[in-house]
Image 1 (cartoon, one colour):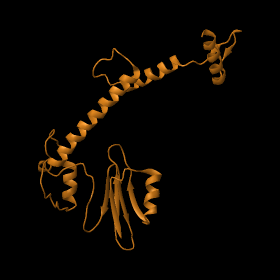
Image 2 (cartoon, one colour):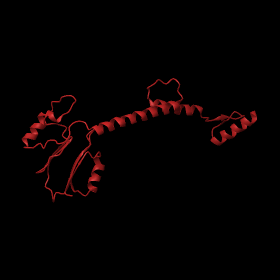
Image 3 (tube, one colour):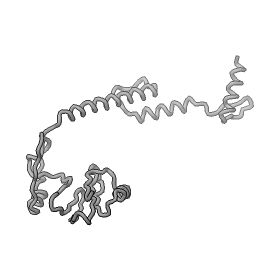
Image 4 (spheres, one colour):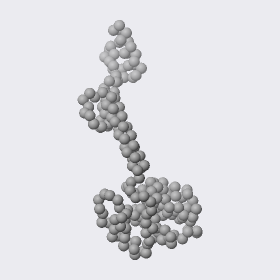
Length: 201
């Protein structure tokens, strides 16, 4: 393979460098992940493919290839490229750069709009997620033994801490023996408890 372009590898820094080097490419350009943008890598064999890197900036990688321009531009050339949402006025910079470099938009082919099977999958996954959240809620409600819980309160950190505190409250950490000395070791507490209960019977 002479060239490889990886879009959104989701790793950056030293780990990304290590992975790139392990792939056997000696010439590479990496744009690290930042926030929701998850990176761009252009890996190549310069002896076989002549690529001039013009620069990297924030979320873009600009390279001079005689036949291809690829990127996560986050920009559009016309409103026809946008579906729904709030109207935007962000065409000026990208469009002028696109035209000044004699680029050609190959356009889009295929169905536009939401994919029905993906929309259905999203609804199904959201239902599953809500069920899991409700199960977690019921679990911590039962575990914490709180009778006054208001419906819809999903503060699981609160329930977890309540459960931990209840366990600590009911745990016997030490007992006082017949001479008034506290016994704190588990074996000693066990022996003293057995002796005290035998004495009661």
